[in-house]
Length: 293
Image 1 (cartoon, rainbow, N blue to C red):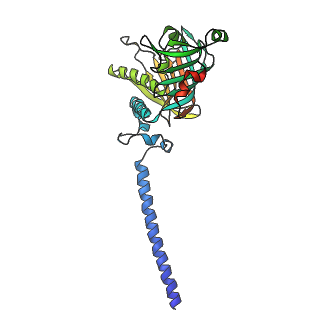
Image 2 (image 1 turned 90 degrees about the vertical axis):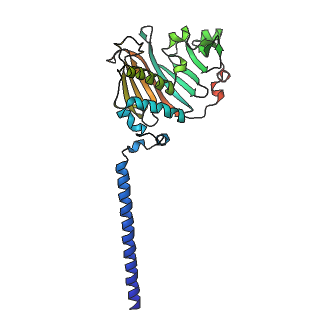
Image 3 (image 1 turned 180 degrees about the horizontal axis):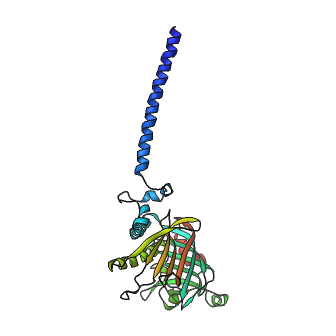
């Protein structure tokens, strides 16, 4: 009898513990459910990059792309300064120059923020230069920033392996719509924001989220900005811009610029693929001796 009572007591203890555990599980489940309902951010946005966004913002950066695209671009630009030090990538460019749309160019690029440094090796359809190297304030002549270029063509390289040219000189303007100092994610965001702000001050801002896309196998948010080109008081660089913002990095990995609102007259396209961020580039990666220039 004593043995049976012990069994019954043990069963009562186990039953009581089970009810307690069940209650705790139910309580935790309810708390989790309430927390999930209060947190509307999609799971795809729960990345290491997203956690660097300051909690002080009323809405996460990841919702602004839809509700307020200009605010999203500005927050992405601010976030860039906190996160990005350097990167390597393949850079595709095609531009309208001299009234003619040039061939698509492909370059292997290296970029570093401090100091602002760019190296490009153009591997497909080089025109005036095969390699370009620019480090801000490294070479300055007559107050003008200089870049080092390696001329295209074996005959040209027999005469001279490299030359120094102003980044905003006549040769540079003939070869590209933008200077090498405009290269990179941050400068692209700066230009997008600059012209959007001008339109906003005029009361003519037209910027919107138009859907999702994909660049280099990575999902993007697509944002479109229309310029009030009928207002000739300001020199608008384009009529319509379509930009792909990487959903994880919040960087403009592709930008298409058009001379008309119907997007039939391409002025330039700029696409970044095979991007690797914060790889630890060194000064030697931007030394002309490294490339024999």
